[in-house]
Length: 129
Image 1: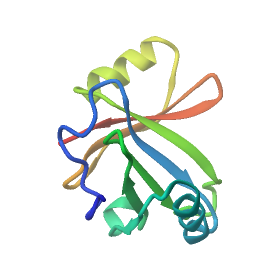
Image 2: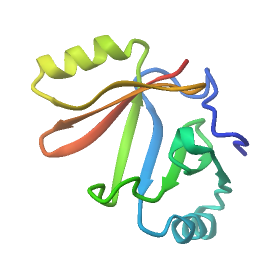
Image 3: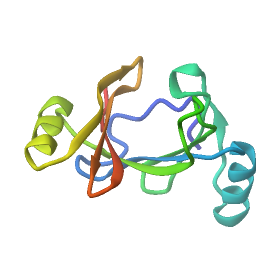
Image 4: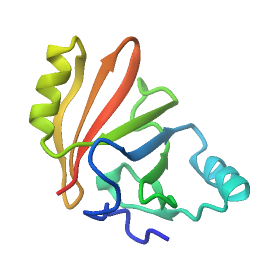
């Protein structure tokens, strides 16, 4: 299983789901649920990943579960699609009408992420370093 929550460079192909993020008030209970249901084994990460628990899924993608990082953050399931060039992907998403909620942001040792809204749905992009 995934030991340190650092995405493997070749773990999943471009334009596929790289990271499934689950934000919930009780992260440990969610981890216990998915472990019992699917056999996923989670490991704790550090502050750079929001203190999430992460596992590698059979297809090489990752799932992270964490508590909200601030009062305004609500429980959500957010999909991050792997992209080669996050700046180009954000620009293209804007051209297609998406609203950018988080500009490309570096997560040291893990790459860059961005979040956008499209059709009322919050989604993410991830460029692996």
